[in-house]
Image (cartoon, rainbow, N blue to C red; front, side):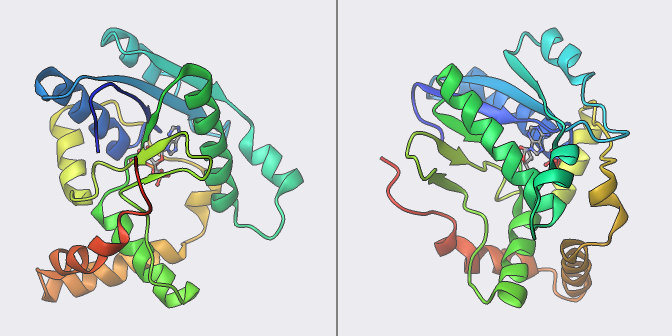
Amino acid sequence: MIRDGDRILLGVSGGKDSLSLLEVLRHLRSYAPVRFELAALTIDPEVPGFDPAPLTDWYQQRGLPWHYERQPIMEQAREHMDGDSFCAYCARMKRGIMYRLCRAHGYNVLALGQHLDDLAESLMLSMFHGGQLRTMKAHYRNDAGDVRIIRPLVYCRERQMRDFASHAGLPVVPDSCPACFQMPTRREHMKALLAQEEADHPQLFASLLRAMRPLLREGPLD
Ligand SMILES: Nc1ncnc2c1ncn2[C@@H]1O[C@H](COP(=O)(O)OP(=O)(O)OP(=O)(O)O)[C@@H](O)[C@H]1O
């Protein structure tokens, strides 16, 4: 996923996954056989109770280039959302900000923190409710062709990220988005369903990963 000379912008929400990925990539930079640059972007969607601002101190202490973007996404959703769920609207708005920052600062790669559990849940949701065999891609190019998107944690389990974040003492910002929080989503339901199944079949996620492999990459990357 990472090539010599890449300039990577990592989206860091302050959750355990993206913060763990930041640590992993920072460490990787010190011994990887390829040279790459790394910067963090945190988007503050200005939702009540969610304060990712302390992350900037952490970036500074580590001498990491960082960007902090504030946008009242929830307020904008109330005015402009049509037919979407708030979460879908928020994700689209954040992705727009990420691409804009990549272009403005010359980052050719956008890194995101989704892991195997996220991909498995997306696959099931897509099959159950969308009638399609698809999930999030591990490595692909955006439609405009100027940014590669990578998800380096796609082979990791969520519980590994939780353990890593806790052992490394990462400054995880609790997710308190009222919209994500209040309603039990289909995704939560799917997570519970997979956990129940995994309790009886410990190889479940290894099997799901094998099934998803052909779906993880899309189109030419060069
Ligand atoms: N507010 C944000 N600022 C920057 N990047 C974000 C933000 N929200 C999400 N992302 C990026 O998108 C990925 C997927 O987002 P998602 O909402 O599924 O995760 P999350 O609940 O924010 O937590 P985590 O950081 O633990 O993945 C994140 O891992 C992160 O790379």
